[in-house]
Length: 165
Ligand code: SF4
Image (cartoon, rainbow, N blue to C red; front, side, top):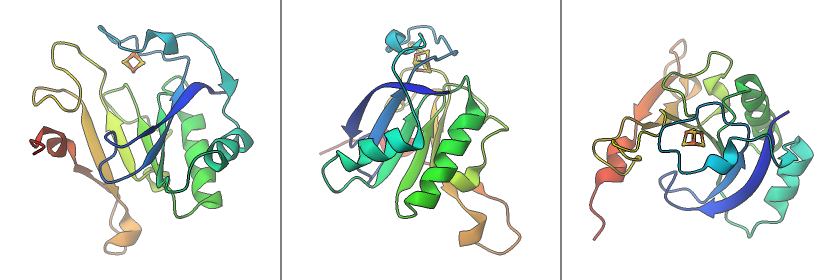
């Protein structure tokens, strides 16, 4: 069972979305230079569907996306949480921040609108660093394109490198 330690409303992590970021504990990635070591332990409360709905109901209106931050120890559970969230809240976008370089095979992109891949390497920096190894992708679903096409990933990472005036 995945557990979460805390949540935030964030505006930068997913472009053009108001995102409820749910920080999941039990991170197995152990990136060098990790900025969130408090997420390595098996801490927090179980992230049940009911808990997630309660978190959403307690936010101000306007949340357009839920981002699962971590959960690499149990990707099948990440997939299940995202799938059921889509069923209950079809207008909400879903995102997964994974610390792995390759998408876990247990995760079905039909259930996600955004996926971030890549460990945090301090000498390369986060998404906003042009040297970063991390990538944020928009999932372009096959249902939105030609019938028979596969889901594809559109790299949004350069969005983070644009200068803000
Ligand atoms: S994915 Fe890497 S940076 Fe993120 S919490 Fe886990 S070890 Fe830390």
